Picture 1: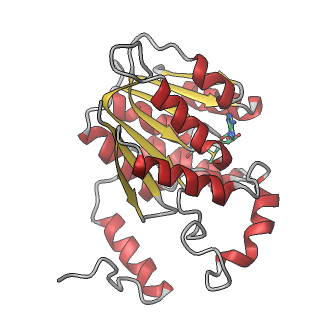
Picture 2: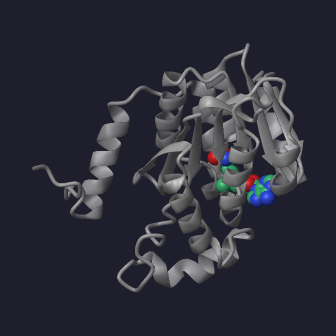
Length: 250
Ligand SMILES: C[S@@+](CC[C@H](N)C(=O)[O-])C[C@H]1O[C@@H](n2cnc3c(N)ncnc32)[C@H](O)[C@@H]1O
């Protein structure tokens, strides 16, 4: 029997080489996404908030395979991932982003204008308040959750509550939930000294500006809810910082 825990990466050197090899042997990103990602990395102090190029490829592939034409993003930052969704859904599709920091929202909008992306709208405000108020003319095919981690359980509950059969809904039947950072450097699974991330967690919380000490508990609550909710077919993908995947069954 094959093990579920293959020792693919016995050390950092192998992990780096395997990841680079896998990225090289995957389809590429459009030039404007490369350019904007590089711009963020070279110019923004909190550039680590943005999804990596390789992870972008993974979720773009998934969204394209699912035929997503309408995407809701919770947590826009500089607009890199919403540009990525814009590329996935195409000019006839639609992307809605929720972002509470007006400066980030403005920078994101400037990027959409620069790259001619006319199919993205940004709602500026706290997603915890804005999500329950959204009233899309058609339901979304995919919701990408990438805002403050303490909000993940509430976002999931709202999506479920507002996407019931027979009602006007946020997420369509069979639609996908994609949630970033659900393993939080492994701390959700192993939150003690054996995990090298354990020691730096308090500093990382302070530096991020919007992470909180409750994040690990809330991410664990989110992961358990995804797995136990009968209306969701869940798969937690232990790649990158952990990607929570859910398909809304009804
Ligand atoms: C990890 S970043 C998003 C990165 C973006 N998805 C990307 O990959 O390019 C999280 C963003 O969510 C925003 N955010 C955090 N909590 C929020 C909330 N309650 N409502 C709206 N935006 C929020 C932050 O201001 C930040 O810009």
